[in-house]
Length: 280
Image (cartoon, rainbow, N blue to C red):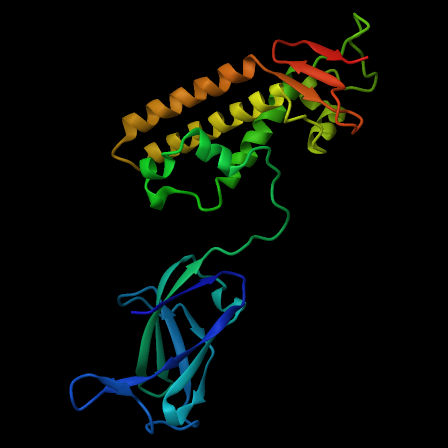
């Protein structure tokens, strides 16, 4: 059975279906000269089996003499439908209806509204750290969006760690105090705004270590989630624990280097042993 792929919230291109009928020789031939443009058409979608119709698609004759029909896929047709595979039937909208052709519609999630959450690391970095991820988890458990949510969570995790280790002080010429900074480091709006504006330097040696820590943090989350749905749960949990330790070990031996003025240079360093310094 033919299958078409469409995405929620997106107008899909129309398809043309040539109706077929059994020939006198047992095969199929074009169902020409059977219908007219007055014959009403519809296309119904349902999840399969004896479940009720979930949606209908606009359907019209392209060339009734040749038995060709067009099925349209407007974005609003998917309202209320969950992603999945649906059975589709082109039929005469008569009482009772007469089915003329069948196909399948694979409905996939479309792009969400709003702005994507920011990330520091890429999906490629995850693949490079664990090249056998797809073979370990199976294609059905691979996030085709590149683990976007986990990567965004990893950025938030790192930013919170940086904020929680930030201590303004003025005990040496290399350190400084921000008078308007909140005394609670985890609520320091000045530093939080700087991080949100991509002030963290990521391509210095220390920045690369922080990226590596995030990659390990994401892998720990991926393996732990997969363990809930796999017969290899023990192995996956061991991998999750390993990468969680690796993420933390990498983090505590790193320093966050932050550009406060947008010149690409280190203005502020935050050690995860609670040391804060400012360059001259």
